[in-house]
Image 1 (spheres, rainbow, N blue to C red):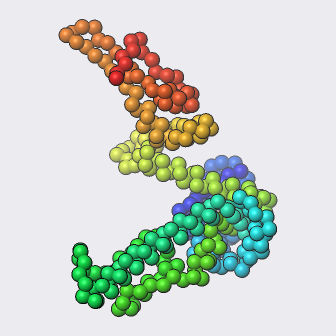
Image 2: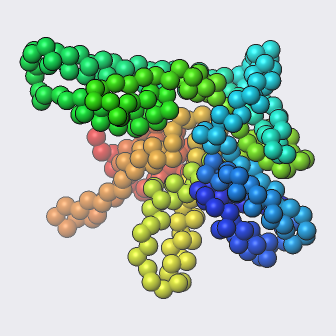
Length: 333
């Protein structure tokens, strides 16, 4: 049993050779491809359903529905909305049918409330800026002077359009780019649609024997794997690789992989003990522990370790690492 996670591929053409290599190398009887929102399209779905394994069984997949496609599911989700209103809880999970496939729906009330609150706050801030610029433009038209550079309708329109785009609200706040005046409007229908989809996760799958909760759990594992890639690229700095010989490149990758395993172990132990610390923060605190060596006038060298705080001691205990010691302790104040 194996799951192929491919979160960034927009085409299926690169996924099929990967699956074939995995099957040839390992004695796998079942493969489930788990992919993020970039893979879901009509063409990709058709291609995925055409892929068959050497055993003759079809390839199974779990795909997330991109937000831009949510409008296709508004009517389909209405029964789910009714069920949610009746069974109000922290999280509601359901299953629907879409295009001959299973559509798994998960709705989290807390996430929905946070998303709505954040969006409303951002819209209010953007509207405040727009009103401020409109007031300045009106004042300039009336001949009043103000501090700073003179504002134009084109300049206000460009700035506002850019900020709306950066906030990912272009579907809701529509800036009129053709008008000579700086104008915009809030699409109430698009706003209501966005609120309807707050807190929802939509997954499309052809795996028939997995419960909705199992499908969701397998998809969420994708985020954990992608987090590992981000750690490799950032904290561990797997690249750039300044090697030319294949053996050295493999050695570099192996060392980074072992570092990632240690990172994951650290994260698990810190979380299990509810320390509230990330591996990066824990390492930052532990780096303050230093070993010093002092020699005065050619006398015998004295070595010691800097004083270890209670917080550092607690971190070492949580990680299951022995407290560093030295034959001669050198406390540093």
